[in-house]
Length: 214
Image (cartoon, rainbow, N blue to C red; front, side):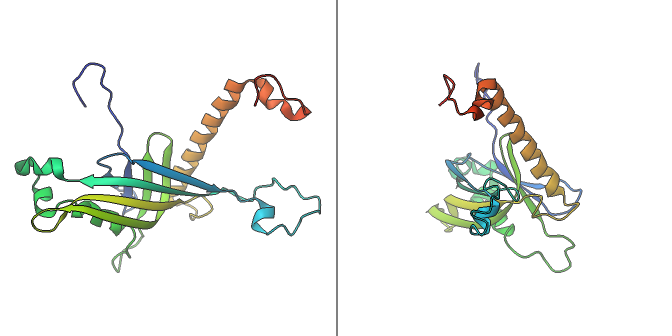
């Protein structure tokens, strides 16, 4: 944290990788927070997922069968330039550049060694609300600078992931509690929006548009 008056501590996003139940995770904290984030939702409406077989039967077209499928794509950067300016304090960066960070991210998508009891699971954390169990679906690395040993020292990564819901995870899996906490946080935020709008927003079902409601 900077010592300047009025400065604020900036939270850093991370991947929390749990290799063993009950053990602390291995944390891959972002050097820089994502430069962009895309968050896509695919609602599980019954009529949509069944290609409208009940059209005209009086079924509720808004009935939801389950939690929406959510995907996240982020752009993050790894850069060893600052560390290389102080080689005595950053032996890993001097030896390997940012290869260790890349390898750690890739490890979440590789098979576990034979004899390993459980597959590791990953939690994506970006702020207090977006804390979710995820399955990484793709990583694309753009290596833009190298040291004299051809180790990458500046890399931009595009990471795509799918949020795992309680419908994806088996009973007793610790990721279920993480997802349920995410839903509770969203419900709390949605409640703030309804409360801020007042009762008029909730009473527009009478066909009238109240003043101030768009």
